[in-house]
Amino acid sequence: MAKFISILLVVFFLFETATQAKKMKVEKPYSYEQLEQDLEKIQKKYKRHIEIKSIGTTHFGKNIWGIKIGKGKKNIVLIGAHHGREWLTSALLMKMLESYAEAYQGSGKIGFTSTNILNEVSIWFIPMLNPDGVNIQQNNMTGFPAMHIQRLLIMNEGLNHFERWKANGMGIDLNRQYPAGWKGLNQEPGEPSYKFYKGKKPLEAKEVIALTKFIKEINPSIAIAYHTAGREIFWNYKNGKYLKRDYKVAKKVANLTGYKLAKPDPDAVGGGFTDWFITTYHRPAMTIEISYLVGETSPPLAVLKKEWERNKYVGLKLAKEARKIDEKNHNGSFSRES
Image (cartoon, rainbow, N blue to C red; front, top):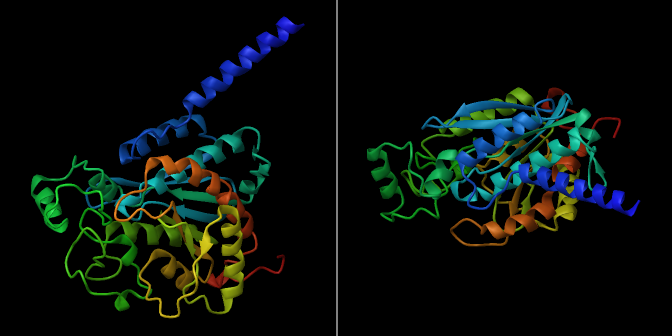
């Protein structure tokens, strides 16, 4: 009997080892190329439970991938890497996607948390909105014309290392491209740059055009933009009569992650994705800053494990909150059932 149990334990260990070996591993800065490789593996493994589509392309032709998990008619959306140096958010969202897909197809639970909510509310992941910017930040210039590489050097103030790069491939800061409050943003820099250039007009960058069209298509109940860094949640921008509702949702995420809630700024200008979503759809949206502050660079890969532990239940928690949001007429009010 003892020998039989020992054999079972060995078989179980080998199965667990094989299963773990198939999971995505992040052992170096998370790149667009690794994202596509991981998506191919995830598609093969969980094809009955996920949908993958390109929501558009960058100026240099890279696909902006969207991945849906769940069968629900309602949606929420989680977006990573608005900024080139924030690829850690892409790795985090891909880990969340894979973990949810594995649980949804298998045990139905992550820890003690059920994934059954995905039968009612689907989660859309856009792990890397700015793949051109990520490639530049990682000094991968493959696919950029030689003449444009020279322009990138000028945008980077002559520096040939790009670790501080935030903008897209055209030197536009994607999170300063949305109509809400765009006119009030500082005009400096007045030309393409590694950070802060807001463009000649809102909705100029191809990535932002693609995302706003996609948001209109899926009509999400809640929208999240992951950024780095500071372990802080920004949730308030002209929320109006929905202030208390949105605070309650943000507070639940703060309790899950241990991140602090940013204090409302009455003089906030805007121009960011969540500013636009809140004022357009009147529904909850948050900018979630992961990792401790690191200055003008990407956070170290070593913090991913801790940030994952903080964020692993965020998607499922927000899916549950989405059940309470009424999307009719874009008013974003709580339904009578809540």
